[in-house]
Length: 566
Ligand code: 9G3
Image (tube, rainbow, N blue to C red; front, top):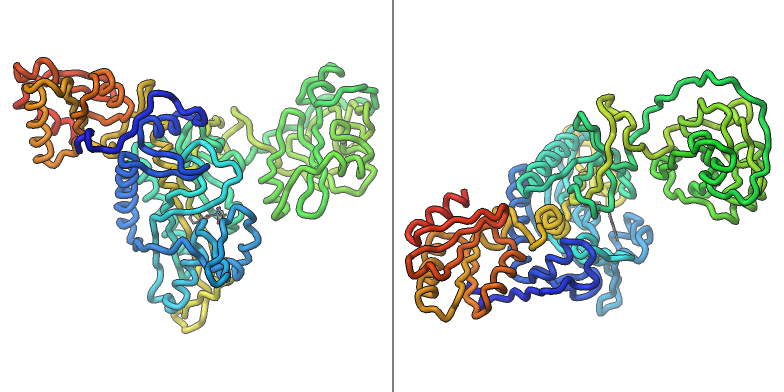
């Protein structure tokens, strides 16, 4: 493509509302433009990269035997009523009405559509297992769209759905898809981890998230420093490695702690460490209140609370709830002499503390020399806290380290929820009607593009891996007014294209500096510059990734380029 005829609107300045590198560079290099908050157009260069990513996804999905198809974005509301999800998802599910005033959802995901589609077709075990997938635009009305393509309201997703007559078959499909995802993200050149994750609203049991490591990632992953163990921090179990303390129990005492509110203030006031304080938080789990006690230096993990109670909602109670129940504010709550019959549970880290401090359920007072069992009872001890860096890895080998990640893929064992709700059954070998068992598997394609830029850039711009770059070669002519330079460049352009090499030819009548800056910004792996030495038949080659430069006779530069492209 000749740049004088291309639509690549580069920008010098960093756009004001773009606060992460991938968002800034994709805008500046003319790959995307925002149409509305969280809604983007892919300009020609962005679209080319998207196509390369999709091609790799397709190859690996097709290799698993999955069938590509395409479903509508407009989904009849009836389907979402049948799965009781029409109301479950509030304003995030975009809805509209047609001319006959019938309600539709704009597809945020396609479990309903695909299950209702196969329900009349997959009626025999002989037709199972089957995996169908699509690469299609999804709509989710995010409350706070941000970070460009990382959290948009309209985005490209590959979503796949598998159908089975048994859980063994589902397990096989899950493994196959897990491996296909590892192949995809490796071929995309990403530094990623597959982590044990929480199935969230989807229910079902196993699920793994694929995380591209990045400081701008919203998720925190905990991984072992010596094994392959990795989990979303929400799921990482804290090993109950506590032992009985030998310290003698001192008599319980109640001290005035005027105006000391936070755990740290109380600890400092009493000359204690944070570990010796007991943190007591009031949670509302579904419709009941629960008092949760942890060591002062630990944080309650609400996902673990949710799993413990098989609850659908877990949230911190309000200060008002606390004063209504305990006649004391948040900073004074404690497990001793609770004035109400609220259930009290504690993290394992509390079981063996000795002579700790805790709130006295009376503003301005705290207990000291608090000892569990003697001074307060709990319904149960459980793993209720977030793990910390340095905690032992749950697989028994090494210690945990943290990293931030961008969730670019997720694989789920769905089970039969959707098939039950939509009446999708099949006849098994004995002719008995059974409910289909499903798996679902997603990749955020446009989000993955941004994750790649986060991992592949330098201070001058993007640095595309060669298999993803919008073009393989960037050909620059330094002075488009010099006949000899233009002649050499035009010849090279034709010769490279004749070899099937994708070339972006900067034939614009711009200053050299502008061309170099744009070329560094766009990040095409190989740059050929035709300049003053063209008259002696020499051109320059520069590798974007490492800045390596070399001079070549025009006659052999194409062989050199082909050697770089293998
Ligand atoms: C909605 C809205 C947002 C949603 C969902 C539904 C997430 C929803 C979970 C999934 C599960 C898998 C197939 C591909 C892989 C992920 N956010 N999820 O179901 F209506 Cl507004 O999408 N679906």
